[in-house]
Length: 338
Image (cartoon, rainbow, N blue to C red; front, side):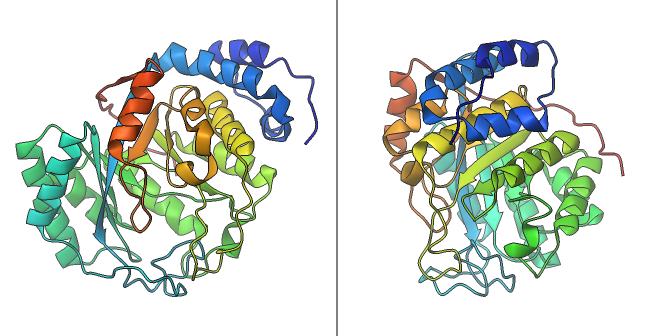
């Protein structure tokens, strides 16, 4: 790491004035010496507080279908190339998904995230998810996000009509590095799914995984791609090396670097919901609270096949910071240009 002469508060001021940070500025954030962290986080918090105050949104993941996947994503414990000893089951029933939604609501979550493994849903799976969403919307005021793999316009339309608010479909990494982590579907197929969902009026939740062997430039590149897509929410995942996956020995992240990634995404996406996602307990460790000076959202409870810390600890952390748990008002997104 090397120190950089950037004045972080001056950069934050320019961001608040409408400046879009350059690639060089973004790299300076990631490559800054850890001794810069207090000033960098203060700058990120200035931007975060301006747009989001002290608000924190909670998201609750529901592992709706586990394993049974033919894709070869090298980071994933559910992929065809994984030997991880995980639970495998077909798509849960609408009744099971509804129970999960009630659990999410009891944990003060604003968004209930229905996640299913696989390349994409078949007609029966899509119908079951749609049925569940309609019932959840009747019973709760939860925002619904679905992560179901690759989707075509008709499938996106069905989900929108059922009441789904947002689709999660992560880019995971840069276009240049993508082929190193997956060969069974392409980066462009992910972009096509996002465009199909946007054009049906769905909000987009789209993020990345840090720690897979990518360079700092890769992280900057995916940030810039997300700027072009204009997504509403960015989950920042930190790779949890799961034994039995091809990347089980890959992650060498430090708490300081993870905080710099979060600061970068706040400065690069000042008005976007930035969520600290999978791996935060493993990699931020005792510095977890500092992540909320840049991010304004958290996943709570478990992360599909890996456990998270108890929800009560997350709520306590938020309250100890003087922050508050709030709901989110959905916006009407504009179509993505082809």
